[in-house]
Length: 117
Image 1 (cartoon, rainbow, N blue to C red):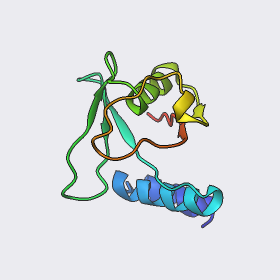
Image 2 (image 1 turned 30 degrees about the vertical axis):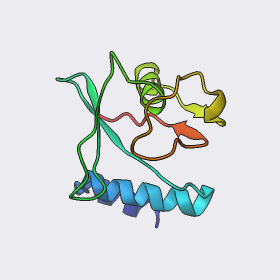
Image 3 (image 1 turned 90 degrees about the horizontal axis):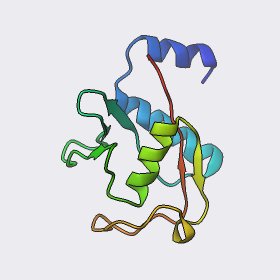
Image 4 (image 1 turned 180 degrees about the vertical axis):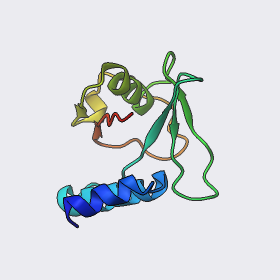
């Protein structure tokens, strides 16, 4: 896929879920990433909202002023500071662990802010 074809897809208004699929596919092929998640900023609610990957997925919203901890705290810090944040070992993370009722905690995380207007 060339840069011009990617630009054309974004200019044509590619849906955010499709964009997530393309980003996740590229990351898994290049770096061996096992999961990619996309969060969109809701300025009215001052929160980050997860883009669902399936129609039956529950909506997830992270309030930037009070994230629950763990990955949510990392997401909030990455967005507020507008900086790349890499945590190679989540067991020694600066973010306290949160409740992992949705599954096991990741072993490593990378938070990448992608700003657009």
